[in-house]
Length: 299
Image 1 (cartoon, one colour):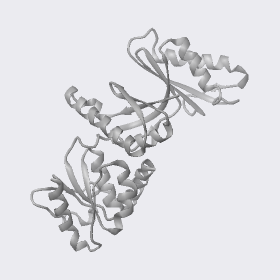
Image 2 (cartoon, one colour; image 1 turned 90 degrees about the vertical axis):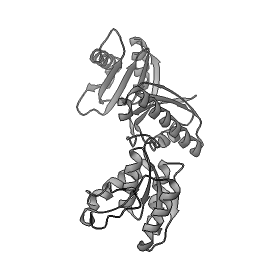
Image 3 (cartoon, helix red, strand yellow; image 1 turned 135 degrees about the vertical axis):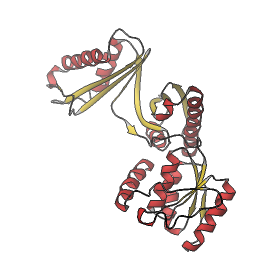
Image 4 (cartoon, one colour; image 1 turned 180 degrees about the vertical axis):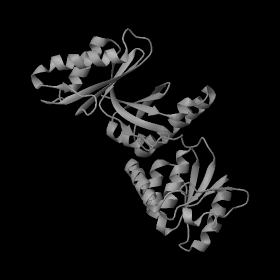
């Protein structure tokens, strides 16, 4: 039986209708590219602010979706009609194995559309029904620090029940901004490339041996079409390699891993291309911490 994943996206939903349609189309295309690379089959549908993905292998699909820029979070959900009795019965069925004796729980309800109840009323009633249904388990409601959270998202005639969210990278879909070339010689260069990819840029990489693992084992996970150009280990050759790749890729700019203490004395320019240094204000410790978060998403 196919499972259903609810995919949420953030800032692109705030764009004007024509821009939002373009960005959503690119987001769907990027999802399908990830699925093709990972051998995942699925079916997509959407409404405002959400995508719904039907898949046979939800665990593999969820890992792939967490690597798609533009997606803020993903949940495996259970879909029912928006009718209080149906929501109650299905929620109790799903919650039964999770609510062990003495559990503290919270029902989080959200609602979009016109209904005969508010979000607060729905959460209150569902919580009361759970207390009554499992009275022998000595459950309690704790909205601040629950052991179990039960999420109920009502969207018009359909309601989605779930228990957790897997974080995505957020940002904008790959391909909605310009083309860049980034030098990836270590974690600072890799993080700089990632941050520009997160803003929707297609980024080609120039990678000396010191950056190989960062590029191929992590960044390539976020872009199935990522172009990686090997470079000499000699830093003196990197500027030329960046210029050659920028010409071939018709890039609009160059991304450099310049730490704050070196900026702007070692800043370089290639023709009329803009030079970006998105990690310029970060210490090495901050770069390491942020890169660890990136690798966790790529896993």
